Amino acid sequence: MEYYRSMLAALGHRHWWPAKTPFEVCVGAILTQNTAWTGVEKALANLENAGALDPRVLSALPVPALEELIRPAGYFRLKATRLRGLLYYLEQSCDFDLGVLARRGMGEVREELLAVRGVGPETADSILCYALGMPSFVVDAYTRRILSRHGLVPEDAPYHELRDYFMDVLEPDPALYNDFHAQLVRVGNRFCKTRKPLCEECPLGSYLS
DNA sequence: CACCAGGCAAGTA
DNA sequence: TACTTGCATGGT
Image 1 (spheres, rainbow, N blue to C red):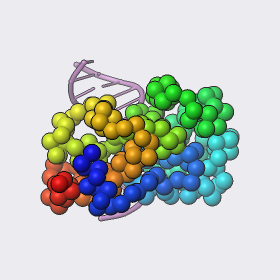
Image 2 (image 1 turned 60 degrees about the horizontal axis):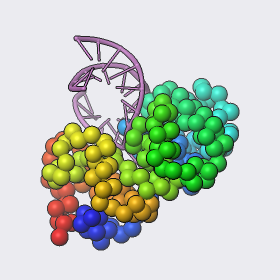
Image 3 (image 1 turned 30 degrees about the horizontal axis):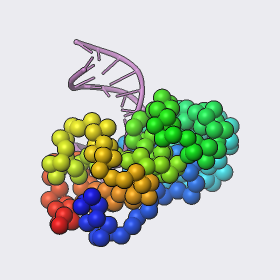
């Protein structure tokens, strides 16, 4: 919590995820897997220009066409199938009305998302938090890097351990989880860019006080 | 040129 | 169960 207060003071509220609609969040969550956001932006722009940032239009799109549109996000064949899988789930579970999912129990929806091929814990939590407005803490590479380098968790700590680390302490407040993860990404992006063990300039230490 | 980016699943022993 | 590998483009 001290980290959060410090980052909040330094950076201000971020209220995050660059997307216009909850559905766009779902698409972005798949596209950004192990990929720089710049490529994802291009892919999303392509989809937008094609009028395909709509669940029904996107579902009707032939796979090769979809692959071409998302090519700049990398792993395009893989992600095309993953998107189809997620679309199928969204249609079956709520007929593309994400508000319906948002009113159900978080644990239940999380399990269902994890059962979709190509949806792992981070993607599921991103959708829960940023598309459905639920208090599911998102752990990503930056989160792990920042916490482990500050000796708060082992470097190879499993996903759920990091998630619990936050959720055991924080109130289940969607806006808080949203902003907190955004802060971590911002700090990681600016100061812990590399995978290599040291990030000398990382000023998180100075955020603690 | 080498390395990295907001993961995940499948294959191997 | 615990490693390893494939997936692909674009930027530094």
